[in-house]
Image (cartoon, rainbow, N blue to C red; front, side, top):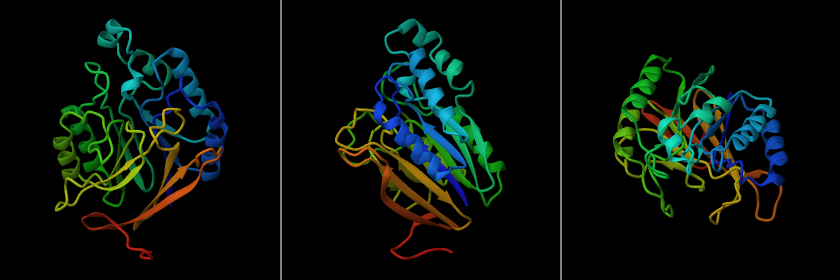
Length: 273
């Protein structure tokens, strides 16, 4: 089994300091093979915030990868935003904005959906789709193919943010090249399930993590996800902090069966063992 921990929207600069140790403890106890952060590591893309985020990630004792979010681009420095939008991200977090990590059971491909031309809305780049599909098409058929992006390719009910530009075409392209799971954040809301705009087509499932550390909860709670990958099954666990709580606890567990045409949500008590 391979285990992935999915964090999102850490927002250092507006993170809840009382949750730093509980989050690190929960991840340490989970012993993930890989920690993935789907963007918004910072609140205002300041060097201090990036440094705090990098220190936290390095302290987890696990391999990690990240992609930038819209908050990881300077907002109040328009010249830097246009000419060197990812300078501080690259200096403090990673040079590669779209990293790829491969394990025995899965291959995880980053997708940079942030757009320096707008503050909030993301966009799908054709070059990103080509790169991801090349990686997936070269991978062994048995490996679970996971995309990590900040902006969701589909917003479920209750979300009030501007949908990502070219999201539908991007989702079609990822489905064509075999993506199984798309991890995202941005909404500060937890959700996992099939893409409802594709009811008659096989394709990837979506997992939106909420905010793991930010104080901007929007009626939700702080959380992160655990994905357990086996040859025949994917288990998605939501780890969340209860209201007025201080530890991350199991809130929800959803199982998916790996079939010939993609992942299908398992019925109660059904497994593919």
